[in-house]
Length: 282
Ligand SMILES: [Zn+2]
Image 1 (cartoon, rainbow, N blue to C red):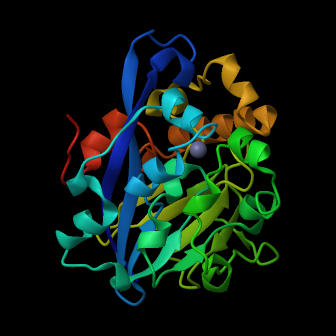
Image 2: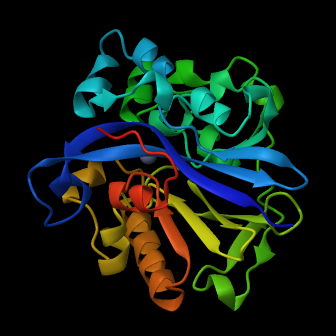
């Protein structure tokens, strides 16, 4: 069962490069909010994450959540919205059968409430610890609760962590994965460190090309290629800085062992540009 894969993005934010990668420049760079469209012959159209949407602005109108906008100023145009970009593929929101959620930061989930028919697939511990946070803890975890649709629980199909599979050498050094659709076409792997229960995806395209979506396990491809972590200040943001470094080392090793795989960090402009079919960065 092979898929068509399109890499797109919905909006972008700006932040200094030296925060995203150790030794980076002081200038601000674009961080596109990537999402991927996965069209599967049997399961239909699915998304990996959603990028930004106008709901992000609604949710960050008032203080203290408005700080979130200051930290990462966001640019988003009407045509960038997931629902509008789907039209180019002759798809409507109701056609999206599944959304695979890497983690619950706003730039990955802002359009969930526009996708009223999808099932949500994510690792249970990615959301479990967010459920009962106080408003000030929400802010610390960069979690905008209002982005979660009211019927989220009933539409969630969390990954069954007890049913891991042993991955072949093709995925080394990653050994443990989750066959998310049961047909081997989409394999979830845990990429801990940046957020609780962060999930990356392996997905193979119809021409045999393997994609590895690594979400925010690295912000820039260069970090993976050079095993170069972000600025130390990001340790304040990550729930598990040590696990972050270990995940980055594993990605670096993976890249060296399998240079033919398309490794896609969600916010690396250079990578997104190289793969995207329709780009709206200005
Ligand atoms: Zn994130």
